[in-house]
Image (tube, rainbow, N blue to C red):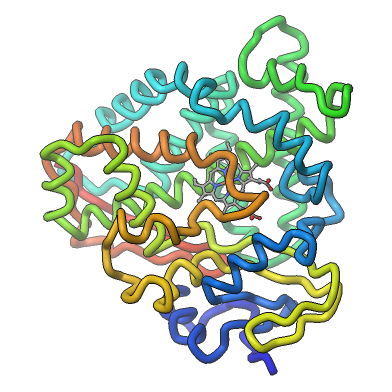
Length: 379
Ligand code: HEM
């Protein structure tokens, strides 16, 4: 038997983490109002992510490259696209990301309220991604507006609205491609136009889908991650001072991953069963829509004895923030680089970051995770 949850819409004021922490021990698999089977426990989420024969990623009628592909088709696209996100490809962009972050922090007022998700996270994500892909700075306003609309559409659960927002993003991408084709510029977007899979170049629909995954998925996630990180630092002056004293990149990366594990804003991904599967004492029929709930899995006390305990090195190997298995995030290095640079710029450009006592931070509304607004004072 499974338990029923109301479409992940939580009782007013409930934190998604507290809610799934409460459900998980007795109800590791729950069903929501959309008929999706939501996996809450770490071992079950891991098992489903690793068993890609029983749990297909072909969940959408829209083309999704590479996330909606299975088997050898998925492997071929990952092999062709992963090099764009490898250390050697990212290294030349580091200095530009650092300049963008430092300039953004310099431009922030001191002692007056700054909202970390929108004014820091989203602004930084859009500028860094545009620099990485070679997109024009004039797109910034349109991309920022899109991040807001996309979150609102996800929150609403309205598929028509979500499809409209996706279409708006595709229009932005098509406008970039039209301009790129009219020039001989060789930047990341230009390189993508030359990628070959199966001995042929990608068709437009595939390029648009790849760019949607690289930007659409990422812009909102980086913004949400910055919100979670800034909230954590602003609420823990002792951690802030320790990091201000100096920390190596590798140690800072572990700290960032651990903060995101405790409050993972990238909540879930979908699968569909290809056959009947027994999971957590529940029989899922073939063709069942499934959600891998990363936020809940990352707080499973069977694995992280106290989900709120801060143990960057100890918890690293079980951390599922970037997923696991063949669909694990190919953008992890880029995300980590951007988040590390944002945190370093904030620490280097200030002497203290504190929560604004006059504007309390607000949680996001499920199914979006993390914080909607994190007003802070920079000094
Ligand atoms: C900001 C923090 C980010 C988080 C927390 C995150 C998290 C994840 C997770 C959990 C998955 C696994 C999905 C699944 O199993 O279905 C994933 C996949 C993916 N991510 Fe990320 N991601 C982030 C940033 C990025 C960035 C910067 C990019 C690229 C520029 C990116 C591109 C992708 C793509 C293309 C996939 C699909 C991979 C596949 O299906 O093979 N992500 N991400």
